Image 1 (cartoon, helix red, strand yellow):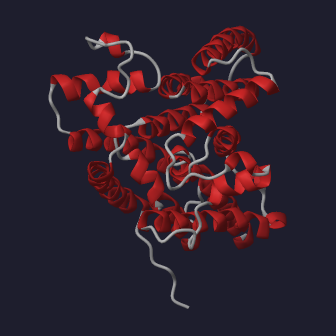
Image 2: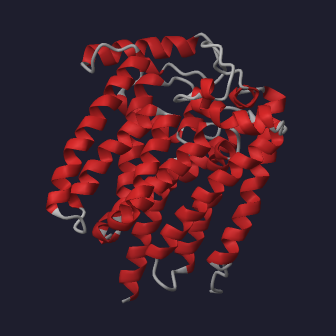
Length: 364
């Protein structure tokens, strides 16, 4: 059988650059055709309840932060909408370039062509590129998460990347920053390169920052606490709010069991659920995602799970936790595809890493 011929990783990442930037123009066309938050972000009109007048007035978290970033290129420099999307695409490509390098470094020097083909497939799945190539929170969320994970590889020399990743994620979506801060605690505790005395100094600071983040989350969600009653009350309000839009892709998430919720979050829409072109593309990608989830189960006993680097597991933990949150706050397939776009890649990368180890062991 003829051996599979694939481009060198250096050549692939160059192709990936043009592939990713091309999505910025697809995103521009889509938003101009169907509308969306990105246009209001660029026009600084998505959040105006406090009547901002200056650049400083826009500063804050969530939408405020996006508009603060957009103020100079949009209002001062007058860049068009399409150029704003290209700028955000360049930011997210930086994250993809860093992530790709991290993955290549964990593969064998001469990876199996089939493993490499799976890796390339993972980085070409369109949902990630579509949502992170335009003006919005997904591009910055991707960068924040990648920088955090890069920082976990060597805290002694890259702690600033981890810190910046947490801060960026917090300003974009406070919950994401809080989750990364929570993951940072075991990362610091398990880090062998940090002296025990320094860990004793870091932990109280971590607790103080975490407490303030929690208070801010309660403030912006209008929750009185984190009891099951408070959480379910917030869930009902959030789902009711989304129901007002009566979108065609809305689903009765509140009536689903948790297995059905998780199936919906990870794998819906599937092909055949709709004849709509965009949902068909999403369905094909979700089918590929399902295959990536099934592969580790097929080879479960033959895999050495300890060879997979910890940063992939931290990313999977982050993504799974967000999925649990989405299970009680989202009831729209389109929004779900957007919200999971920047972290689904890590579930796929875990499979690639596990299969790479399997191939390596079988070749010894």
